[in-house]
Length: 516
Ligand code: BES
Ligand code: MN
Ligand code: ZN
Image (cartoon, rainbow, N blue to C red; front, top):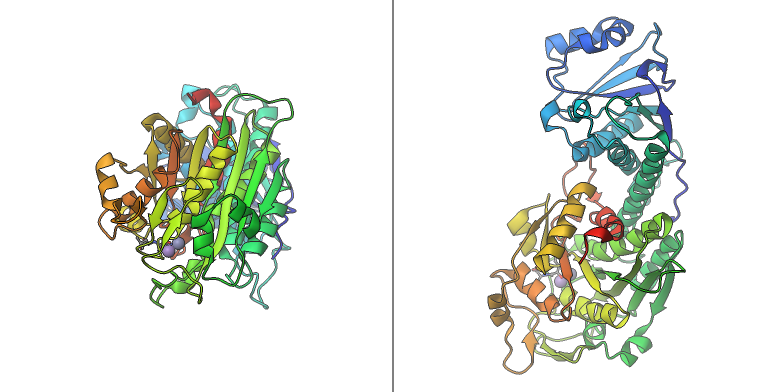
């Protein structure tokens, strides 16, 4: 599969909707709106709009669509698609992002060649404080997310060669917003980069374990990150041994594929001081469980156990293109977790690079082992603020389901900040506790700690384990085991890898004003 993205820019068209010369004009429509507000559009549809709204064929519930031809009469588009936007009072930037994806997916299915998405700010507009640039960015992200395709291995699947040309149509909002067209255009191109980076991470996570080995993961991640101003260093097992990374090497022992540790660096040339943000991602290219082997049912899905690592690599790409004024490093430990003849055994004791010893009570709790050494290494490289992302525990899906990631860490202001950035980026998270009391569950008879404390609060004890390797730096841990993969298709998200956390990680370095 290709790791480069050659997507065409999204065009911005400023001006009133009737003048938009696109094949399909997509218009978000709020519940209860009457055609009177768009009388000339209704006219151009031969009053199909009135009819569909009157009959209830189209009720504007979120993601409902209605397509009808336009017959000139002042309107330049060939057809219009109304997409339900729900109640105007409940409209959010997050919904706009999803509507854009849903509309573009419908357009793709209909083989539309050119799509224009109308930016409608909703109720916020009259108050004059609507962030048109933020809305335009989210729409650009959403449109781009619809370009993702997971059919790379289907020999008869249609290619992505004929993706629709994308335009965002921005009506004159001068009364309601002070945004300059240049700022809005910049936001759209920013959204394009963030959407592409999300899609690249989805491509990596969808990739099967036999092709995406740790070495191949490192090679592709490096080529993706280098699309931005990012340097990549790939450490092999000899270098890991020199760093005493006993936990990472311990997990890798059961596999005949050698492990790799990716280090990405972004640093504005003139910036030698200030914070260093470290993004750390779990990169298990296949998790069989090791000797504590998983049941056969659903094990195929464990190819996505590198989703956190993919999120870090692809966020680094976005960061390298968008160029924030802060240094950022990415660290991704990559290995398989396999039950080979030399594999880690339950009861084995490992020594981490930090020096702490760990009794391995369950070889399937491998993520925290590789991340422990990676977090330590991020600190050695000068990190001042830590964020890790991992498909770490099945327990987080029990707690929060498949729509919301768990966020853990300390201090609270840092965790809250990461959560708020994630909210805006469309990655919903909810805070989980890391009370000291939970640390007792990790007590070992013979080592400093055990790696697995069983089912009670399993997501929290996993986080407590990671905490041992964070020094006293601000640290947030995002457990994406429930959100990295969509089992069910939704209007705005096909089945498969979701690309969760990419945009959150990429936006974080632009928020340093709020850091302590
Ligand atoms: N990669 C899994 C977590 C996971 C499970 C992700 C299901 C997605 C879906 C992780 O390495 C793991 O096996 N965790 C164990 C830990 C346990 C042994 C303490 C778990 O959560 O069951
Ligand atoms: Mn596991
Ligand atoms: Zn795992």
